Image (cartoon, rainbow, N blue to C red; front, side, top):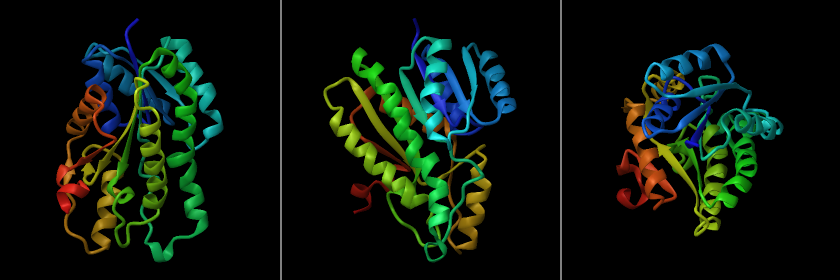
Length: 244
């Protein structure tokens, strides 16, 4: 049975690029997002390229629904070998730290922290039993480097980054890998790109670089195959060692 990658937060940017990259390697694909119409369009697009994909409509801001969702993917596709988690959309935005309140953070925590933790809990027994599996998470650069006027998402993502580092270390030697792709660029063709660019401009910052999601998907494939680092920065010049 061929391997399966489940793309949580599948959209027109990084999600479909990851599906396409792993699909070229023979993976079948589970696409997970809220909007069924968009998912069906992506399934058809991938099918036209010879990649088998299935659509799973779900609200990832509801962590309690994760076990049933994971089981539905297994029932249809037989297994899950890789999870790519990155459901940021235009619904989420930056908030200056001076304006941040508990309600804003509370609204971000389920999608960005609680649900990825629940996804790991749901797939980990299968992976440890098999001695193989990978959890790949995409996040913005503010998770690693706080920036003025661009808070809100960062504090929550930084908690998830902390969790991924601990998870990666605990899983060493088990055959199961956890890693995070930290992106300091806007992602072309993604829903959040325009909204984020407007936030950067309102903060009087420089024009933000834009990355092709196919390039990020290549990072994911490299992380999955090599499993030699817990975090990959894009651009690589943003890594703490390179910036020091």
